[in-house]
Length: 395
Ligand SMILES: *[C@@H]1O[C@H](CO)[C@@H](O)[C@H](O)[C@H]1NC(C)=O
Ligand SMILES: *[C@@H]1O[C@H](CO)[C@@H](O)[C@H](O)[C@H]1NC(C)=O
Ligand SMILES: *[C@@H]1O[C@H](CO)[C@@H](O)[C@H](O)[C@H]1NC(C)=O
Image 1: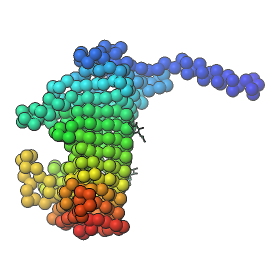
Image 2: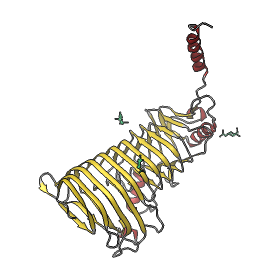
Image 3: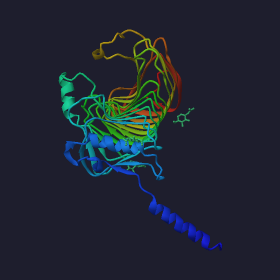
Image 4: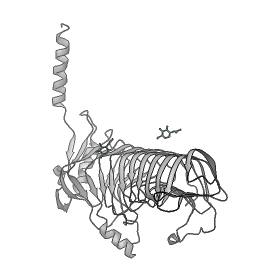
């Protein structure tokens, strides 16, 4: 064969192969889902997942579970792996909404378990929390209510371009998982909706949250025990309770939180800014290797806060007067500026028995409202200061 014909043949072969590749698509409508917002499509979604998860990926592309435009009512679904393919793509059309019934019957609404390689693209997940929040506030509902999106025991998960609305409880929970990336996501619920945190991660490693907007009724992001190697970048938070590490030390034998970076964040009108909180209880634990940088605060009530005496009376636990067993060390705050809604903009309230160590402040400019000087308060905290730091440090 001449050297000239070979490239042509390759082009033709490639084109043929592309044409004959079967796209492994599992459209929920083909499994009986109804985009009419009336019939419960949970059975159809479950069946489509079963088929996609069973696909070996022999067609050369990853199986796609497709949710087209429309409104799909979905009661609880449990998407369970391990799957035979390298990872299912769940693609919800930009004009596709999946919404929950107002009633509550489980701990989580949409659950992915052992879903290695999952890629979720959206679309909107609407938790329809309104009735349940009212019930919680009236004291008639005492449970936590379901998390909207629950990812557990999974590796290499990505969640992109999704909108999560009005969750009954936490919007997204990441539990016992490794390598979870959330990017270009929005989580929205009213400021007064109870317990509607944005993302809560626990016992998980390599969690990355990029370009994501949170306006909810509780923490924008909270990192619980056993979470490490976390990167949070380019996020907007508010209203809400801010970015939180903790609560730590609520249980004996907890794993610590380690290696957390938060950079380029804007917090607006939140009750806390960058918070580390531990129960005022002697359970041992640790928080170490945390870096907060390039953070702008607009009217945040407690912009920089370490609270080792967390003990809300409503929880009826035995802690007042006890000292936290959690050791907080190596925490840096750099290029943090903006306004505090309260006079104390910086507060390190650390443990008597485990003082905070290695706190670093660099280039901090926080004022009380617009121009009034703010204050810093310390208890059992030691660290270093560089650059311009206002309010002046209390180490
Ligand atoms: C998965 O594949 C197995 C074996 O091929 C089959 O028996 C099973 O019914 C399939 N499950 C689903 C949900 O398609
Ligand atoms: C951030 O996310 C939004 C919403 O999904 C998207 O439109 C935008 O392009 C993203 N920006 C970057 C820099 O990734
Ligand atoms: C800290 O976490 C980041 C983000 O996951 C990771 O890239 C980095 O390697 C980790 N550093 C150490 C020392 O483990």
